[in-house]
Length: 164
Image (cartoon, rainbow, N blue to C red):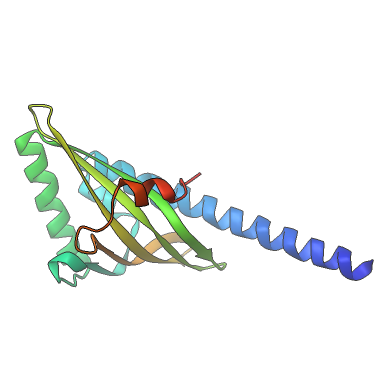
């Protein structure tokens, strides 16, 4: 009986910790990440990234550091604002693993661009993100994604789990 209680307590503690870490990551990273991206706010978007970030949009065969990533993001944000094109980014998750100060998040993204004439087009891809706590706050350390030769679809997106 003592072993059973110890096992239940262990599982409860682990589950509670995992939920707490994921909620922190949602609040400190994903919510401001999505808000910054969807509002074309480069500074807010980049604020959730470590200054040591490694960004790799694999379809473009690039590897970027923080300064390069900021410049690319800012260029895209300004272009979308100038063309009055709106965009929305949505994330769903297939794997979320966290320790007290490191995490791996894998999932499917859906980015929808809406032109001024109202025509919308969505794009899908798989992302892999490594996070770490820096001074008590979760930050994105590695961010890579790919459309996997345009093989990721709405079906994959819907099969993944919502953030909350």
